[in-house]
Image (cartoon, rainbow, N blue to C red; front, top):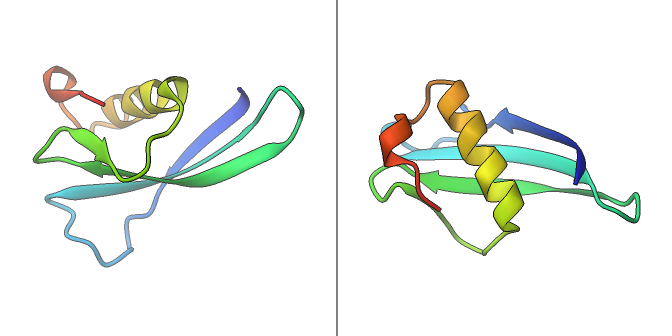
Length: 77
């Protein structure tokens, strides 16, 4: 996974108190670009929806923590 980037969908219409939507993009080993959206549920402390690469979810949790969106102790995937 190369050139991994994340961004927030803050104006998506969802309640900010309970959910965070994150856009991601990266280049895989075949040099193909992959992108999508991760949905993090704050109350459950985990990503919901389709399962994604564990490496992607781990990096997304680090991104959320560094951005101050989730406390370190409640991280889960």
